[in-house]
Image 1 (tube, helix red, strand yellow):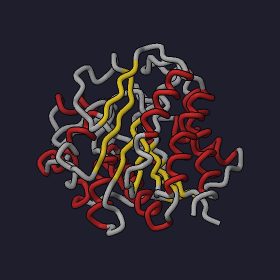
Image 2 (cartoon, rainbow, N blue to C red):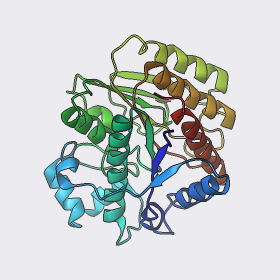
Image 3 (cartoon, rainbow, N blue to C red):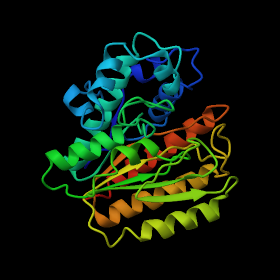
Length: 305
């Protein structure tokens, strides 16, 4: 029986300074809870991403500047995650490596795989933004099409509360990669870009309306030829999230996940899970929803094939 593979490295936590505004503790808390509840998951340690993979989605100057510690203070402030630690470079490379390995595992196993981080959709071609340094969604989509002959069409489903602006700009010329972003309209980024399909939502939206809109849009993809789905599964749509502005319950987030998982299972298409945002206060609300997500993935992995 196939076991859901989830890529994780402790550097996801310790690679961020404890004084950063970013809730770094969520990663170790999620892993502890998954192990405590004995959820059937095959944890895998990622490899560092390679330069050749990073430049599939990014400008060489930007990549070299980051890796060599030469970004300007303005570029660093735009990314956030400050104060930066000595491990920020390796953390970034391990997260991207985890996403790439999850993508490969999903395609080779014709099943699900995930990264317990990533979904870095605000990283653009030549700069980072909004806690995102390199765009793993864009890089994985491009790499999958270039390296796997069975992958001709990729669908990116981005259900984080924030628009996947960097993903859309990097991939705007790729006709075989479709970007779908369903997000809170009056939220970061203030200046929206154009995805292949954008579904802006009003602040304060509740479960039933949200799920109805999602199901209607997912229905439009059911007759399309799709070879790989990348799912940005941010839980910052939760009503408790400090950066979200939607009013989705924990159960509503699980129903959202089920819509995507059912869709992938129905089409028998490999599915890659990227964790995305989650900034609830206290952070336990986000942790619980991410644990729900990976529990659901572990169950669905047995249904595929």
